[in-house]
Image (cartoon, rainbow, N blue to C red; front, side, top):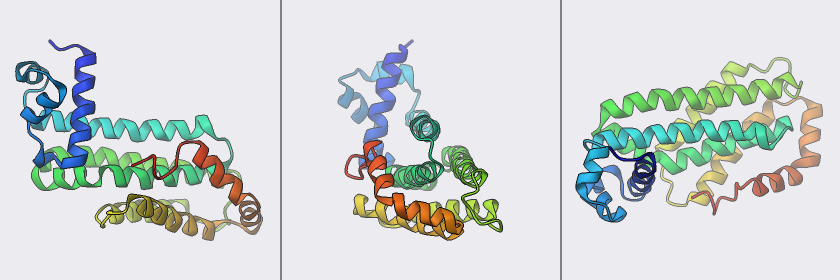
Length: 216
């Protein structure tokens, strides 16, 4: 039985390889070779590539939830939380769009299981962020949180299918579209607050590690 440390190394390496080369372009032999590990040890840990891919997709799901939790540990300004959530969504869709798309094409059962969790996590993250902002009276009274969340989640999913050959530009563009929409839901006082603090907010986001060049 492989140790948890060995399992962790396998999943981390496989996820990196699946992201860079696609899940169809990576074999179990490739993964064993990259880890300088015998195939026997690899197959004792994961019976086949499908099982390993499912574990990698679950790791993606866990990472999304971790980023969600970190938003509230690192910032306490509602607008910053909203901006952070949008960055998380944009970055997540860039990081894993190819992996999710290939899983849908070649491993539909694994994809469906993961995609349900991924969609739920994204929806929960967006709704929590929107409700947090609204609870601080930052939105117009007529702003419908559920409609906004559905729009933002649909936008994220649509952009996952688009060309992302320029990761930095992609993350920036998607984030700006989302926040422009959110800005349209703000009340007058909040818009003024954001405009006064925009430079500071963006600086804080960069300090939190959301430099696009680092998130690719």
